[in-house]
Amino acid sequence: MQFIGPSSDFLADIHVRVVDAHNNEVLHADSQGPFMLVKQRPGRYTVHATYKNCDQTKTVSVASNGATRAAFYWNVE
Image 1: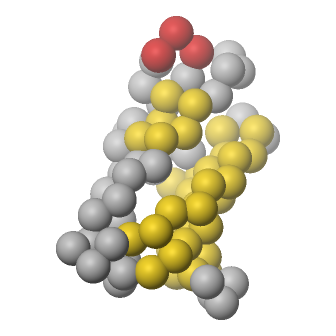
Image 2: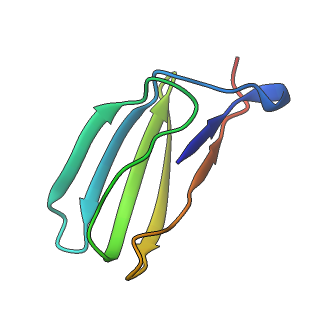
């Protein structure tokens, strides 16, 4: 995952929560930098990311090779 703010600034301290297809929480953490690597089993997940009380949600599918990407952009200062 990648976290980007206004003017393409990299962001950190993003609150991240990942739930699986059965709505079970599989990750609850804060990013330490603009990139967050997470290892999950293949399947469909919903990623909830929060920065300065602005929430974003994205659905991602982890392929059998374990690879996927998600980028989150915020326009808040």
